[in-house]
Length: 537
Image 1 (cartoon, rainbow, N blue to C red):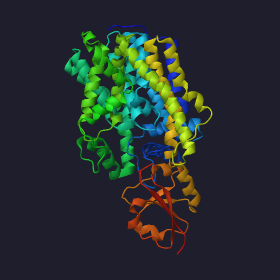
Image 2 (image 1 turned 90 degrees about the vertical axis):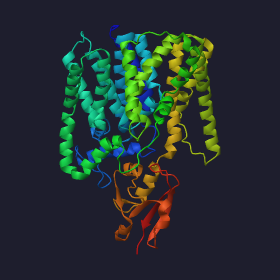
Image 3 (image 1 turned 45 degrees about the horizontal axis):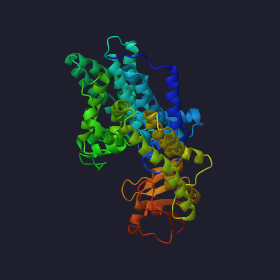
Image 4 (image 1 turned 180 degrees about the vertical axis):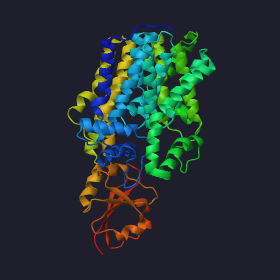
């Protein structure tokens, strides 16, 4: 192993400062605008409202689809930072902190392998990959479980070295990380790191039985706390809970789920990797023109682990019919290892300069395009864009200024290849995302619904079966309850019923109901949403 010294305190502070600026200030600027984020956040809200940290119930009777670690983190952060109130910021904070921790761990790992410069490049390539950045500022399970899996692989890599220090503490850290991963999204939180490191160890010549014994022991230890939670939750949820956990974990892999869930063809994983690695995919394509110059030599240990992780994880997720881009998040830090090697190889070459010129053109034009869109939105009411606040304008033009600096200097090519994407992602998180996505939120609808309701409970008509309005439920503090059509006549006067208006022609609304059209596009199901208020017999 080519061992370098640990990174300096200055470089670690520099990296964490950049990550904090890119992620933390903007987590609350965009309202929830799809069903995924409020579906997770509402569980943490129900924990704080009910005090049930084992199997909280929301929407009147729904249990969570996944284990509780993310929900525990959101609830704890809400208690510490926001007086026990769950909002967009604290809901997304676990993902952002998990991403920062994963990139910091990768920086330390890669620095010890190939030096501090390589470590900084790998860290910035990772955060400036589109799929990683998107997951880091979203209230979803995927970034948290990714951080636990990737970080545990870094530690297991170090534990193979004979001169590894603090071996006992690192084994404990691996167990805790895989425990957190299992408590976030099920057994894959432990199985995938063990699978990758098992194959890596065998390729490096370790004995089969020794490798199997160590990794099996670590995996079993990481299942202890999840098993205790599962037993406690099963005693409360009974068969419904057990069936849901089996379907979400085993049924999704075996393709035996009771409903269709993100079923995609085999090639989907490869397309999503190419798009998720933007803008670095462009650099890879440009570098094909000088592929003959690539030096062929044996992979270093870090490169070997990266190749195996990419192949094994992508191959693993090609098995189930259910495929999503976020499933492949553990691959991106290892792809970043390869991109970082490519940047150092190209250095000040024409290929890297061409790539930077393309980025500079994009960075220069993007603020101008956003400004034009804002002017059009003011002139055309139908163009739904959120107006920019005064502090957003300077941030919006940071990419433009950076591109001008590159055009003036035209040197420090590797630095600008990292700085330009970072500036673009900063402008996206702080300005572009809230401008585009905030108007798509159902938060204003929730205020209208609460104002129209004379009762504490708000009802949602269960047509089609299983209809859930997670966004409105979150912004209504979990006041929504599902009701079947045959129960409407039993509701008291002043009750509000929300329903998917695609199915309105199946309902016989008599004079007892005052109906109102809320939106042509609900944030949860992308269908029209209507409201009926019971006005009297």
